[in-house]
Image (cartoon, rainbow, N blue to C red):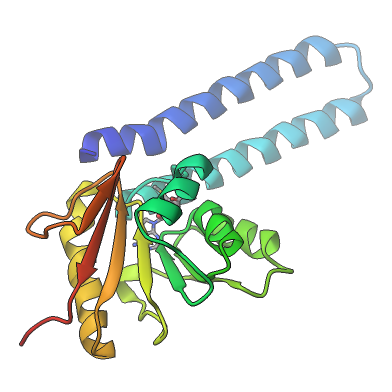
Length: 217
Ligand SMILES: C[S@@+](CC[C@H](N)C(=O)[O-])C[C@H]1O[C@@H](n2cnc3c(N)ncnc32)[C@H](O)[C@@H]1O
């Protein structure tokens, strides 16, 4: 995804939608409150202000994280069910790490396959949402961090990423470094983007499976 399109999807579209929503609320408020008591008018105008600031914070956080990497777009459950059967047979002996775990869709499906899972996510709202979502699921952990600055747990077997085309080589290098530390290969599943310079072991739909060997010195 080019940086222009990324900036547009991540910032401009949500900002415009929120703008339209905000203007509609303002219009409704002003048409309904002309003859309302002053206290009600004050409460409504405060609500619009709060709504506006919540919108601004959401746009800044989602836009900001999207500018550092891929914007939040969830993978599809149906496709994940297929790839965890056909592309990489996920099972209870696996520890899957989702780099940029979004709302936790991948974590949910992978834990339904019996695997332990760790999500690493930069966006604090999505981290909070996932932490609450998996509060009673001991197989799922979520960590707020930049995945480029995070080490993988020592028992990681497979890494999942739905990233950005321009980051794929850097992500593969990161996994290679971790494989070197662990002194064994790691599997990498990439959704939507191939890794330039690496040959996939297998492909299925828009998913690519790589076996990343420890980096040779
Ligand atoms: C395309 S979404 C994928 C979400 C999830 N993995 C899925 O497939 O449903 C990419 C996610 O990566 C997060 N992200 C982007 N760059 C990141 C980084 N450097 N560290 C951690 N998370 C990042 C974004 O906030 C977004 O939630």
